[in-house]
Length: 230
Image (tube, rainbow, N blue to C red; front, side, top):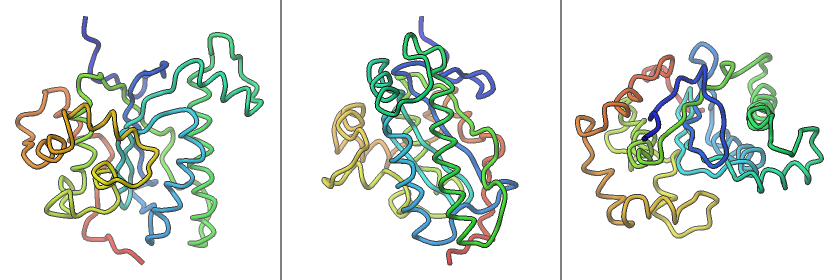
């Protein structure tokens, strides 16, 4: 039986080797990126804290929110991570798997917030709590990847998703080194040209009904007229 494509973020439980859409926004829609360096530092902290526990299939960074599509690593890989980090979690059966993943995301967002607050001479939390997560059926990966890459178009920031520099779209098509699961991603679409064609010719009306719901995520709205870098 096919599992549900989406499960409410309030009840989603992390499982080994399952896919999740992770997303969050700044408090009250506050911008979380104020300069180009912020985008790079955000991904640097993401790589440091999340890559050890999850594989990344897509991302998009928007002025006041972000999206990631991840797959939780295997039990064996997470056991190794816990041993290497000497973390106080039970490695037998990972009864606290959700706690481990949540802790890594909290470390990631906290590290970024600390630097951002210093830069902006502000204090307090930057992101909404808790971060949002939805389980994604593996059959729907192409739709979810497109949704994430198309977010800047959906929010009227650019006319074409190719024009937005802060997503994984261009990296997937490039040959440069990356920690994205490029090979698996391209294979999902049937090849590099098929990946490009899918993104170019996709229309929301052709999406699965469940995936269409992603286009109106609660609380993830832009304030385009107020966006200014620098």
